[in-house]
View (cartoon, rainbow, N blue to C red):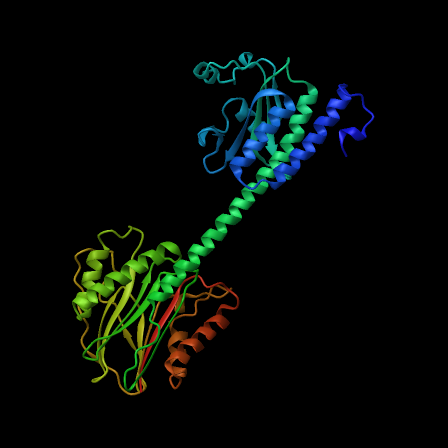
Length: 425
């Protein structure tokens, strides 16, 4: 429909109103097609000046985290912010009602300092809330100084109609921004996970007479566990399993830091006690107070079947004997990063006999609770390892993971899972 389709006399009040309503429809289409926030705000302000025939118009957007209203100074792309309960705009935001101020200087809520600093004289003001479909107030639209006389009831109707369209447009803009932010975060998390997974061994070491496997499953896209294998020139094998408190991005960053410190310390000394001491000393200098790292460092000599270990708050770790009782390898000191300057010592040598299984894991295995809040537990874990002793190392891990899922019965994984199996053939 166009204004030429009507029979209204040009220049009549009815003709002007129809013209303004048709223009409002065009503006609504422009609002729907605008995806940039600053462009959207500029379009709203321009539309208000045009429809209401006034000097100025400003959109104040509500910032929920700070409970502030802010507007953009378009010429400088700067923000002006103030508490959401201050002034005429704040009152409109709190009440959700249009406010007509025919004499600005007669209203105590009007901030005269703005006029004093700019030399501008504000005469009359229309202030209208910007609301979403569910009537949530997301901002305020304010128009100043009607060109001829004061704002009329029709101006108020136009202002409310425009504001309703603008509120929906702002809501859509916020949803688009939220979606874009989530997409960026997903990409960053995927990249972080790829980097972190790249730090894990691509394949288990090959040592004659042994079957070795490692596995990691973060609770989130990134995790705080890691494991590592390193074969030394003399054939001995370094293994480590570590677990940072918590999971997610913060834990992943600390795990990466710990991994780098471990690699540096390991190449400086093959003494697992010294390695733990060096990592602890460096880590304790800048680790957050609410964080720590449990770690189990192992040095295995495949030729003799003997290994030594240093456990920093990590456990329980079990040696499942093919003949005889299970052996719990206890931690000799607190987690890494808790006490700076602490010296860790390697254990006495322990010999692996044929059929023995050394099972290193993080606490996510035995602490995973089902819907009845019953943890999988150490006893189930040891029984499962013994029952699966005739399987390949990788199959032992995968079978236990399947049993974990059955035990969880749909309860979400709440912690990272990491396991290393060393089986003496």
